[in-house]
Length: 341
Ligand SMILES: *Cc1c(COP(=O)(O)O)cnc(C)c1O
Image (cartoon, rainbow, N blue to C red):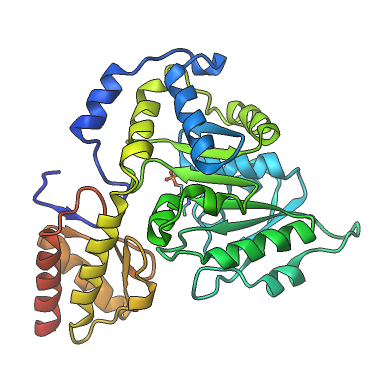
């Protein structure tokens, strides 16, 4: 696909820059199943230092990171509470049920991406043989581009502790949340027992995620990674890209947030097109219009070399490969569409 295409489907479509490719070519490697890949170890150490946790584990994908977290927290017949639209429930093939016999208890996300803690409380099962054992609460940050408030995350942490639940964060875009709030990763991660984080989204690495938590938890997760077939050998080749991305490409996310903001503001001025600007907090813009209109708008943009994605709503995601100069082109194409329809 040539650069003349403006691909806003997801921040996963970025291709590694020359800097990343060069770093990968030079990476020192070893057998990571033996724990002997120095580059993987350096990435894991760096991630645990950044997040203020004891340990981290490099895994092939965000999906496997979440799956392993669920397997390590919950036994068969145990339950986790999460959002109805949570990635780890809705978009990961039901892996926790299929492979772990783990029961989901999904609840609707509030408009701001949080879960109402009173609703969570009512969903916790009493200790009775009739019920699954509720073990874990899962949050997502960012949630569809929205940043969870720090105060909420602090409340969720005390809530989980009071109710004997572990607290997991699907932080696929944790770095976007931290940059948007202007805080260190540690200030978010301190509220969670475990965190998964994607290196291959806005950070721009070709693949890989990290699962982060206590030493005991990561030890257990390490076993589950092997069980899931996620033990990799000379993984330093890709871990190096993750390291460079996490070390040098976090602050850059602010630019993606800026381009998303100007895209949203430009689009919001178009008659017939509705954007909730309050929801544009990081690198995602959602266009709300009738489903049949969505379909033809998507095709219209497609023919003009502009790709958009989404389920139910059209989603436009900014990233490393989107230039500020792309934004006026997207706005112009949308304006043309709505002025002729
Ligand atoms: C992308 C994503 C994941 C993991 O996805 P992979 O494609 O498996 O790396 C998990 N949670 C959220 C919220 C995501 O957006």
